[in-house]
Amino acid sequence: MGRVSGKIAMVTGGALGMGRSHSLLLAREGAKVVVTDVNEAAGQATVDEINAAGGEAIFILHNVASEADWKRVVAAAVEHFGRIDILVNNAGILIMKPLQDTTEEDWDRIFSINAKGVFFGCKTVVPAMKDSHKGSIVNISSIYGLIGAPSAAAYEATKGAVRLLTKAAAVDFAPFGIRVNSVHPGVIATTMTKDILADSSATKAMLGTTILERPAQPEEVSAGVLFLASDEASFVTGSELVIDGGYTAQ
Ligand SMILES: NC(=O)c1ccc[n+]([C@@H]2O[C@H](COP(=O)([O-])OP(=O)(O)OC[C@H]3O[C@@H](n4cnc5c(N)ncnc54)[C@H](O)[C@@H]3O)[C@@H](O)[C@H]2O)c1
Image (cartoon, rainbow, N blue to C red; front, top):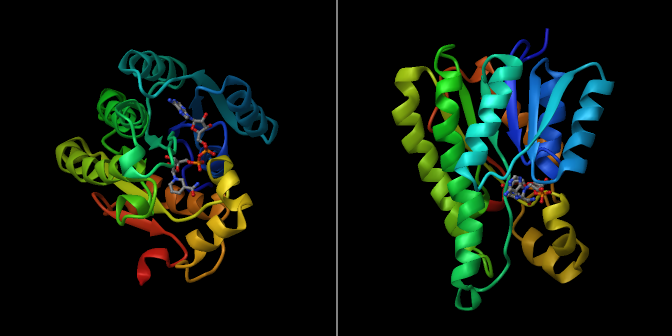
């Protein structure tokens, strides 16, 4: 018996990085998984890996910045699996620029995916979740939703928005039995951080305050996502799970 056996999970940005890892772990622990992403080939590869291992998953092409896309994707998932129990709002992008160089276009683009995408997800999934009275939404923020760092002002603003949107959704959705929590990863080795981690001075700066002195692997964040998604977290809502190797501890 897996820790999320019988549940239906949707993971946005499930093609690569942490979203792929969350999808694989949820499937391994018994969930049927809807993997969504703008990257069709890599998203389908995640699904193929799950199905080859004996799990059950489908891929749906999805731009989280579009409300119309959200409606289509949730309807297709419900049509296929009947309902949604778990939503991991994971899709996100990073724009590394000092605030003074950030353009209006940068701001609007990153907000449309990282913040508005999470808002649409929370809003759209409610009808597919509330009948079971046991839903769990996990919103992926960042340590940069808690503290500042150089050259990522717009990214940090989106992740701060996700942190508080999560608490607002937890309050609004409690009557429907839906829990909503945020996860705040530190430096994780994924496609998003590949270039930063390939540059030794940037890596040194980013890991300088990480007590454990290393980046994490995606699976180390998936373990926290799985806990929040599962019934083990039945009394956990509106909370922040920081998985950062101690980055924010000092
Ligand atoms: N890597 C880190 O160190 C780190 C740290 C803290 C938080 N995060 C957050 O974790 C989440 C996952 O990051 P990652 O490092 O795995 O990134 P990644 O770049 O490796 O993967 C992100 C995935 O999101 C997808 N995506 C991008 N825009 C999309 C859109 N509009 N609609 C649907 N899918 C879209 C991409 O195609 C990709 O598959 C993001 O929200 C990121 O901000 C990452």
